[in-house]
Amino acid sequence: MHLLMVGKVHIKHKVIIEEKHKRTPINTQAAGEKLFDLSHTIEHGLVTYKGLPAPIICDYLSREESRKQYASGTEFQIGKIEMVTNTGTYLDCPFHRYENGKDLSEIGVERLADLDGIVIRADHKENFVLDVDSFRGKELRGRAVLVHTGWDAYWNSEQYFEHHPHLTEAAARYLVECGVKLVGIDSVNIDDTRGGERPVHTTLLGAEVLIVEHLCNLGQLPESGFTFSALPPKFKGAGTFPVRALAKLRS
Image (tube, rainbow, N blue to C red; front, side, top):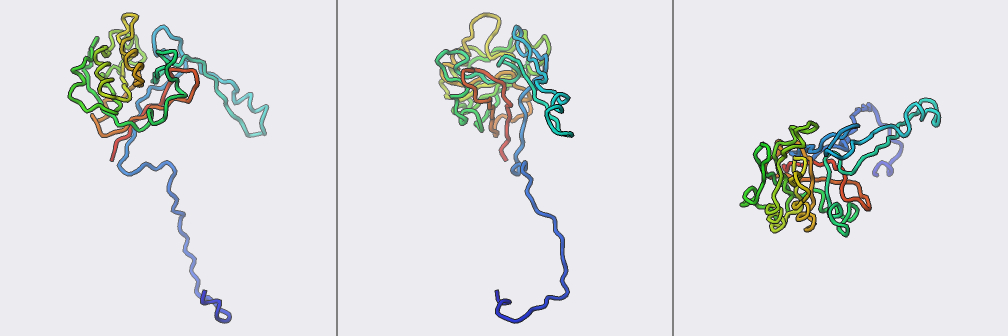
């Protein structure tokens, strides 16, 4: 500002120094954070649950056809997916089991994202049943309880559907009494599927405890010290849908 108070000023011996713009990348994670993908990949023809149809993934508008609609050098692909909502790694909410239960659109994001997580380790063997003793003595209140059985090793094979690990009704009641927010498992079902009853679904969803089935990579997580997220689209009138489940380790 003082230069405005004097006469004509000449600046000599100028040196121009170029410096790169110090821009912070948009996708930078906070120091010490690490993310783990806990979802299976969904692809055309994948059978998630025996008896349910595999997804059909195809073009609604192919790149070739799109060239007829856009300027030269511009093309797009618009996909079309036909599938049941119980496909891949998916979340169950109360509407899945109860006609008047909350559907996906009615579940608050605070029930789905950044939940304090805990991993329960279970034996990797056929017909393994997790009863109350599998969870007793753990701090479970308000947490996402992830049951690691290792059964995801059989994903996309016949063995995945048979003799899978599951919880008992008593274990489900205990988890409700402990005030858990969500229960996930890396097995084909949280219930024993050899019969027609589903007492674990009935108990958990009746208490508005959310369920995530067909998880994977739980063996990479510590027992605690992480948050868990599993967000489906906000669909009205749907009780299940695939999620991109992930865990974030705390620094």
